[in-house]
Length: 361
Ligand code: HMG
Image (cartoon, rainbow, N blue to C red; front, side, top):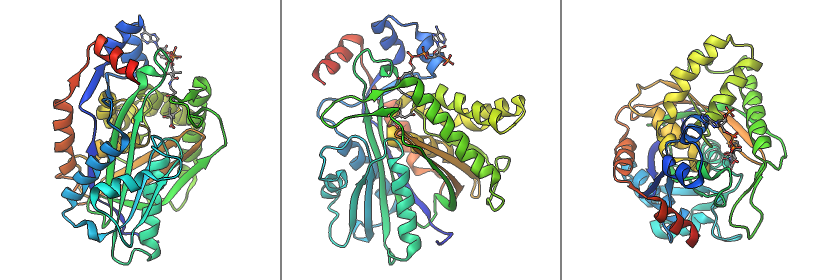
C-alpha cells in the first residue's frame, strides 16, 4: 500500500439544537455532577424532528468538498459509516450521493459496525487508493449518526449527533499510516434489533469490552517492533468518546495493564487525551463520528508532521488503533471555522421543549 494516502479535506456538521446536561439532570432528578463529572459531558446535540443522518452527512460532505476545492466528478468512491440507516437495503450513501449529484463510475456503499463503521470506511478508502483501483480519483468517506436512547435509560445523558466527512487522497490534512492495530470479539454489549427505535445496552459489559479492546490494540502497537512511531512521540491520543469518562477509564486501564507508572498515565491523559475531547463534551456521543470529531479537534492548528493516534471502538465489538501524521493544511484547519460557528449558533432546549421532542420520537 502506498505510504502517501490520507485525509485531503475535512468537513463537520452538527444539528442546531442542543440540550445542557444540567437541564436533563433536573428533568430526571439526577445530581448534575453525575453527568458533568461522573460521565464528563456538558451538553448534547439533538436532531430536530425530520432531520436525519442524511442531512448531517450531506452538510459535512458539502463542507469537505468546499475545503478540498475539487469537483464531484473527481470522486470515485463514497462510503458512509453509520448506525442510523434509513433502510435495510438502500445504502445511506445513495441518499447522500443523490444530494451531491454524484453518480457514474463510483463505488457507493454503507458500512455498519456500530461506532466503528466510519473508521472501517476510511480504512477501505485508503486501501482502495493504495491498491491502484482509484486511478487518480479521490474517495469521500462520511461518518454520521444520531444517537438516542429510550427516555430515562441510563444512556440518555450520553446522547448526541454529528457527522464528519473526509475527502481521502493526498494527505494534505493528515497521512494515514498503513500500519494499524485491529481487534474484534463477538459480544452483545450494545445492539439495536431490526425495527426497534433504541439500542439495547449491557452497560457494564460495554465498558469492559471497550477497555479490553483498547488494551489489546495499544498492546499490539507497543509490541510492534516496526511501528513507525511510539506513544512518547505522539502528540495527541484520540478515542471514540461515548462519554469522556469512558475514555479516561480505558486509558488508565491500558496504562495499568501495560505497566506505565501511574503518574505518567495520568499526566499523559491530562496532556494528550483530555484536550482532544473538547468538542465531544459539547456534542455528546455521535457514534461513528465521535472519534473523528476528536481527531478533527486534535488536528486543529498543528504543525506538519505532528503525530496522532486514533482509537476506534464499535460495539459488537470491533476496534482499531490508527496512526496519523498531520499534513500541511492542518495548521489552517478550515473545518474548525465551521465547527466554531455551529457550536456558537446552537439553540438550547428547555425541559418542556426536550420532553416535546422526545414525545414526538
Ligand atoms: P449509570 O449506570 O447510570 O451511571 O450509567 P453510574 O452509576 O455508573 O455513574 C456514572 C459515573 O458517575 C460513576 O463514575 C459514578 O461514580 C459517577 P465511575 O465510578 O464509573 O468512575 N457519579 C458521580 N460523580 C460525581 N458526582 C456525583 C455522582 N454520581 C455518580 N454526584 C452507563 C452509565 C455507561 C451504563 C450509561 O451511561 C449507559 O448505558 N451508556 C450507554 C453505553 C455506553 O456508552 N457504553 C460505553 C462503552 S460502549 C461504546 O462506546 C459503544 C457505543 O458508542 C455504541 C456503538 O458502538 O455504537 C455506546
